Length: 152
Ligand SMILES: CC(C)(COP(=O)(O)OP(=O)(O)OC[C@H]1O[C@@H](n2cnc3c(N)ncnc32)[C@H](O)[C@@H]1OP(=O)(O)O)[C@@H](O)C(=O)NCCC(=O)NCCS
Image (cartoon, rainbow, N blue to C red; front, side, top):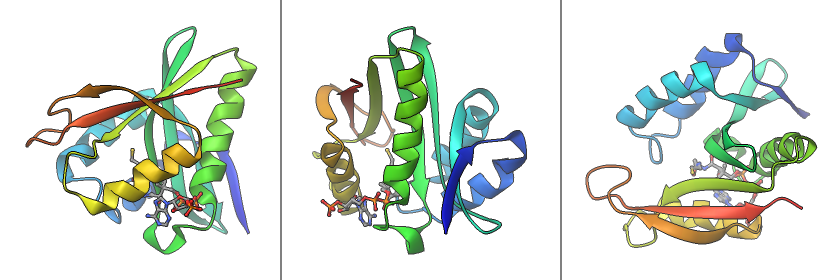
């Protein structure tokens, strides 16, 4: 049974292992950025027994708006509701604080990386809508699309 709980500093190594298993989505430079974000963002992990199978992190730049900085689930657990549960935990925490908007940036559809088509589909299913684009956001010509959801 998968359980979701708040992220602790002692989870960092396990979270980085999940990110390494997601090399199709998270490149080595992304993983370095994750090391830094794990020191300053809060989040949740999904666990099956002792194993961390997924994680989500976020931060809140303004009282009204939060940013989902990372969301990842081990490939063998994809499509089984773990990502949705992690996102749900983040949204509930933010709603309790009165945060109204949740943003996330992912790879734009102009970039030919089929793996990210599924990622965008996941966010659309969760009622995120595109509100902007950031050219070259991920380097090497990988444009970003900014997605936003209203937390009601
Ligand atoms: C995107 C991700 C977090 C979704 O978590 P998940 O546990 O696989 O998704 P869930 O089971 O909760 O939700 C299933 C929905 O997400 C979609 N989905 C997105 N990515 C998927 C994937 N890699 N495998 C299977 N389904 C995926 C499914 O199509 C499904 O929608 P549908 O019912 O309309 O078909 C996870 O697949 C993942 O870690 N992907 C790689 C890393 C990534 O893209 N992170 C986000 C970067 S911004």
